[in-house]
Structure formats: C-alpha cells, structure tokens
Picture 1: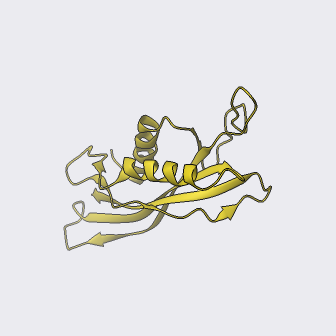
Picture 2: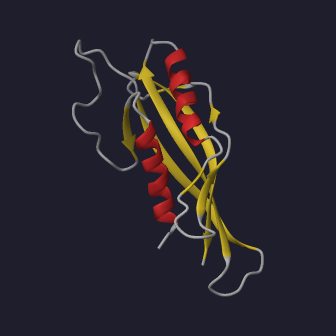
Length: 150
C-alpha cells in the first residue's frame, strides 16, 4: 500500500535513476568509500546530498471515512558541494541539472488518487562554505505534494 515513506523513497529513486554527474549522499547515511570523492590525481570532485522534508499534512475537502484526500506538503533539497576556490559555475550547473529531474513531474502513481507532484525547482545561488573550509555549497529546492487517499 502506498504511504508517505514510499513517496520519499520514490523521490530518492527518481534522483538515483537520472543522476550520473556526481556521487550522491543521503540523510543519516555514511557515504561509500573513498570519501571524500576524488579523481585519479587525488583532486576533490563535486558531490550532492539529497534532503527531503515534510512540512505537514491535512485532509482536503469532505470525503468519507476511509476515502479522505490527504495532502502532504514538502520540499526536496539537493545540496551541491564543490571544492572551495573552484568558482560558482559548476555548482550552479549541477543545481540546475538536479532541478530539471523534478520540474513539474508526477510519479509514484501506485493507486488511484495517490501520487507525488512536484513544482518548479529553484536553483539558489551558492552562498555557504563548509565548516572545514573545503567545500562550497549551492542548493536546489523543489516543492512537492504527496497526495494520498485513504
């Protein structure tokens, strides 16, 4: 049966299936070795981190018990990390590319009345250095709604 956890898994699967540009890390998971990502010359490579947040849910309309429409509002954030002093262009390009994976899509249509719908992505300007001074961050955000009937 479809549920919110499955909707988050579908978002992750959509990114994994479409993303080939860099390594991906996830909330509360240790990245695979070698870490941090480097090329053959031991030069640091960009990477991304997927974060999914739910801001709340509510019943939409009247419905009947067992046949209510629920709306879960959330945000997909793809944080792009590029080596410090490498400029902002690569981070912006990767942020835009990640956003296009989610631009106005509908997926996770497992049952009638159930799906994830995404809005337009916003590739924010890079504006943050990591605490260790090694990485520069740029973030793409994309609002989504998980529709559930039950």
